[in-house]
Length: 369
Image (tube, rainbow, N blue to C red):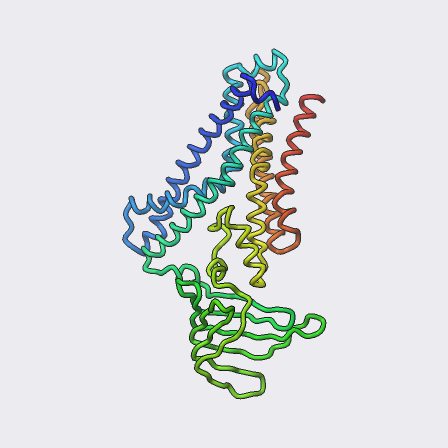
């Protein structure tokens, strides 16, 4: 790694960053062009949307979209950097002077790894915050409130302990995140062997989560099997949910930043929810630097063929195909994780590790035979 601090190492590092800059500029321009048209087509079909408003909405989404396209940006950037060296005959001079291909790979992988760290710790929180603002601004333009955005499909919760489990459904949640409206509580008893037995159902006009770990139900009706319904004005029942974590229950993984995910995962587990999607998102962000290093390494390996030998375009195409295979294998692993076939840790790290070691193996074969 000491090669990175030499003059040649810094030059190759900066050449790689230049390639990344060209690639990300092209991707950002494409995102702006396509998404502005999309905003005009979707939001503009429902409300009077100007071009500047569409640009504003797109600008709020751009950081998140850039984060999602970073693997391809890094793949293309590493190829652009090395192809430029090849066309200027600098690659030929370096190879003739005895510089090993491993020294080309190190600055490229290091640059990609640092971009991954930046994306994980800075770009992702910024993108998550701006995307949250995008959703609220879009909803405001369409005449919806914050609670409408969160509860378009209703609110589902679960609470319980070793003796009972309760499934909660509500039509909407108050913006204060502590009040549910048009609520139904399905209460089950946990019997021996872990089986659940239905005990009763409670429907209420409102359910307010109190700091004393109690649900305060108003205008409710009890319905027990084999008994007539019983109406009551107010009833309090215990809960394991916390008021400060209730609002986070309705947040999508994409709107949670890297720094908020660990706390949210812990809160979701305490609420009796399965935070698989959020664990997958967190582990994917942790693995992002290695994934980008793998993408850059694949791009570099397939761009080292000297231009005068011919066939460079074919090798570049092979590198692009390899990058796409790596990306879609990661998507497939994520689908397996969501269905709980594999753990989120394995699904997030396996593609990154496989791609990186595959690039090393190909380089070893090409360089050392």
